[in-house]
Image (cartoon, rainbow, N blue to C red):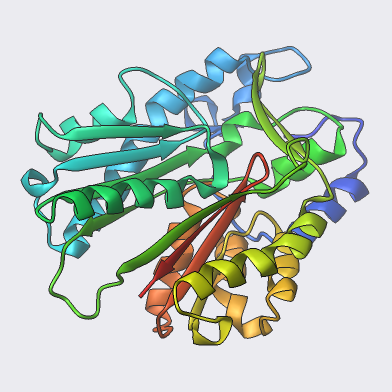
Length: 331
């Protein structure tokens, strides 16, 4: 796929080096079109820039809802929650826009209540799952009877860029498709994770380092190689400040979910926090098996922490355009 999705002028050695550095072995890609013999969506457009944005959004409209319904159905089943009990629905996505959107598809597809409170979190990028969990947490704190369903779905591959720009070749190699969901509600189960704190930070003078805009041929990302350096400088003081305000230190944390924007993001944040390599195993495993799926990725890592029986508290953090940083502490 790497060769087919890159311009002919990009040397094979360059593509191989980029893909090897990303550390991704498998990922899902909706840009592969099963209706046209497994070709990419580029087959729909003979121009050098690949399919138009409208073609890509048409694919998003067809593929996002089934993924979201599948992930949400699994989350409800695992939580032993019937659809009629869900009072709030929070959907996060930044890779496509349609109206009616994924939120309404979930209502009809899952049989949710027609008077459900719906919130759509759009274009926030990789940290949107944490923003969605904050909204769900606030809803349950305001009304202990509330049950909130959080669903994140992204089809990042639809926005692959047919260009020789290095930052976009890296984005092509990193980003993948996926969906994940979680239920937030009051619970008597002592083994269930509990949201202890959610924190946000905007990093000054970093707005040009990562961006995401709508172009004529997909959504176009700007990704500076300086991002890991900035996070290496800022992550430690920020995390320590949030943990201190929560009555914790790094030593209390049994599981770390660092959003794998790429291997260097994990490396820089782990170094800033003086974490042993084993502490970020789940973050690397998710990147290796699924790629960077944007907003669902943190939920995938939290699931891995649970499967590995990592002791809580856990800390999950992710970074997005701005640069913006979001963190959640789970007991």
